[in-house]
Length: 137
Image (tube, rainbow, N blue to C red; front, side, top):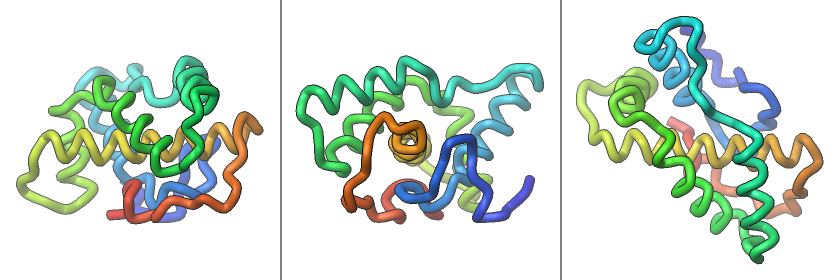
């Protein structure tokens, strides 16, 4: 597995997420368990619709938006795969599965915001999140 910290997934900018290592590890672990032809559902069109719904409802703070999106992603993240990915990415022997799911959901939330900005769906107006809060190991 490539450990290059500058590696980014599709549509990512690095403006919100400090490291995508958890996403790459999660994807690798998912494919290993489910079959190499299976892809985890990470960013989907319904995610962009959900983000827009939140913005339309008045969520304009980046921190609040990331928090809402993190909650949204939690149910989609497989806890056992998340734990494996988290342990590998962080170099740990043991961790709480809930912590692993939360960490991956946080990176997914940040990546979605970056992707939405890259596609011109939203604009980030200098309200950058602390990169350490969204996945920097």
